[in-house]
Image 1 (cartoon, helix red, strand yellow):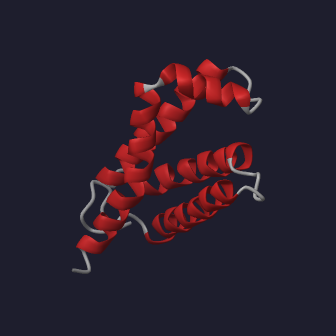
Image 2: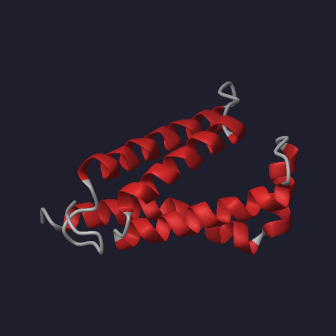
Length: 125
């Protein structure tokens, strides 16, 4: 069990990013409008960057390859996304999304601290 728990944790963390990235690919126009509505510059470029971070970082986490690096990149992405899209804490849904992102950040910090575990392409580093 000790060896499989980090794998399960990585897969569960990655699922959030993989599903979000897939959703952005399936709805590029709507996602780009949402990005623009929050004042982000270059919505097409911001959309593409989000897809790369979410799908690329998510896959690296699942595989456990360069998992610490991927977790660090996803931490930066999550902090930026939280600051831009989930900073209206008086709105109950935004508060929920903010708190969800804090939990994700905690999980990503665990990956950085303890590594990907034995069942990974990166080994137990």
